Image (cartoon, rainbow, N blue to C red; front, side):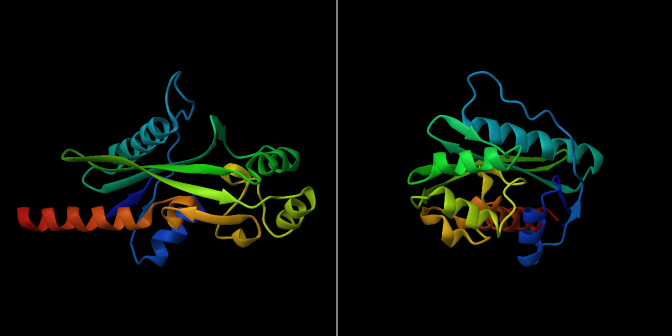
Length: 192
């Protein structure tokens, strides 16, 4: 089964490689702005579906994987920070609190398959001082990460615990993706 990853995310690519999933990359450009009244779960699902659909148009017959991840604290969506000052402010807002990480996932193959779902993981942050945050930033570049952190890079410095899939916090609920890939492969083998 040929899989096309509709993402340039190095973390998603690494996760798929480490899971032994063979794939091609097709980074697609879509409008990632939220629609008024859209929940975080709806937004990540819509964006994942648009990414997978755009790749599926370019690779008919291939199974295309789209994903999008957001960090949500209360009602605030924490995207990728523009600079270190914004990254520090973001981690101070997350400090001592719990937040949700939503990842929308879509698997699409023209003309017969369109799966869309989301995963949510709750992340509990330690109480952080500005010095703690600067020590973390000395080891991790926060600028290319939603929420200004990466659980897989010295996460023990800032994260107290999680409820849900760790892989989801990294950017792809890998266990769920693998399960659906097996289901698709089984269904395909029954048809042939």
